[in-house]
Length: 172
Picture (cartoon, rainbow, N blue to C red):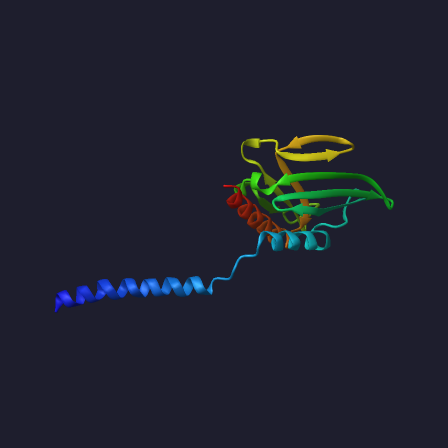
């Protein structure tokens, strides 16, 4: 009888675990595609992210202006007294970004920028692979960062990291 119980448990328990794993896999929600993720980022960043952040009388904004596969372009603009005072752009390949270097840090209570936070993403070993254009000059940097609304920042960061992971998997 003891041998029957051992045989029964060695067959039934693995079968239960297998069926539980299949059921869990079937209930997982599909992850958004790269295109869907980048479109969401593009459509929401300007509206919810950090449009018209007033810093010393200058209104600043950032937008994800374009993307093609894993290549994305950000544009930063600043206006003062209704006129554009400067514009900068960054181009990067998401596959170059290290997912562990994608972060969002809300500014603490009492900080002059309370209600906002700093989004940042970087490339491992400080490799300068991000193309940056400012005032007609081009140069390469290893990190991007910009302020954004604190409530939106965590969602944007999660989406950005998801896009990076999709691109890193595609490149490897």
